[in-house]
Amino acid sequence: MKLSELAERLGCRLEGDGDAEILGVAGIDRAGPSDVTFFVNPRYSSALRTTRAAAVILNDGAPAAPCAMLRTAEPYVAFADAVAVFADTTRPAPGIHVHAAIGADVDIDASVSIAAFVSIGDRVRIGPRTIIHPNVTIGHGARIGADCLIHSNVAIRERTAIGHRVVLQNGAAVGADGFGFAKRPDGTYQKIPQAGVVVIEDDVEIGANTTIDRPAVGETRIRAGAKIDNLVQVAHGVSIGRNALLAAQVGIAGSTELEDDVVLAGQVGVAGHLKIGRGTVATAQSGIPNSVPAGALVSGFPAIENREWLKASAIFRRLPELKKSVAALERRLTELEERLSRRIGV
Image 1 (tube, one colour):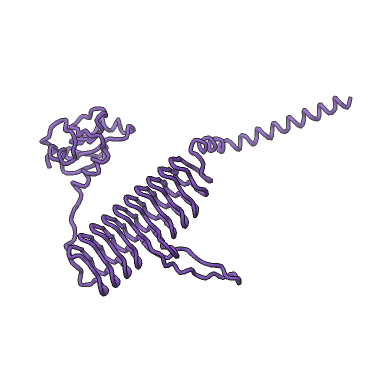
Image 2: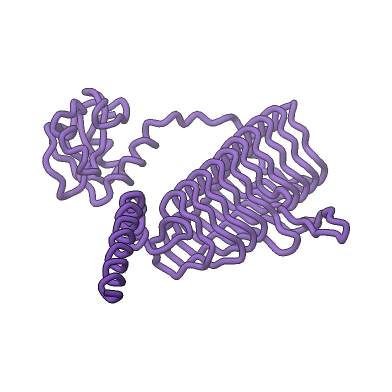
């Protein structure tokens, strides 16, 4: 593809030779004469000056590169679009594989692609152009919208509702029973039937081996545009807001509400029955035992305001030294008190 054509498709302003042939996208330090790369982080300024790429996507105000430039106000978004241009877009043909098991009273659009060893229960509804890869299990009464991509070994339990353009990565489990048990007088536990549902709205992506549980009553809901990484646990009755971002190994306990635009970094844990306000950001490995107001930036355990946590963590590193200092001061104070007592006694 000519660079001029790529610039037009990406909506970028071209500076340089538009006749260069572009064959792919690569990182700024590995790009070659047939690649386009991108520059966003100032840490890579030295790599920008020495890149061998045919062209670089960068911000309107970024320094000049030693090659052609595609300037835009949103270079990272343009980079994502460029990757999509050169990505393998091969998609399986529509139809149901002979080795798929399909239940009764299903409504599957003719444009849907269903691979081998897929199991689909009764009364399932699947919208146009959805792709279902091998070994997927879809329970009875589930509803799946248009243009979804469901990768191998995904389990979608009964009565789960999935919107349009949803991506489920390998091994995700949507609609498994929530962790609900009632303690009997003899100390044993009785399972509480988990009869609720899971609702996944449009444009959501759910990572590999992530689990989203159904509640005993009501629903667990992931709202439109939310992106959930691998190995995340979303417990029963949780509500996740629009465009929320949950990184790997996040765990959210039951009945907690995340409002829109919340960001939880890796291994953040959130206790149950809380409200995390809109736009809150929790840094990696934070533990959140209490509700958090909108717009907060929290860190640590128990999670506190980030600046306070930075001050506290700086002190934490000095605790051994401070302990020695306090012990020395206590000894001096004891000596002074003994001297004062002797003088008074004299």
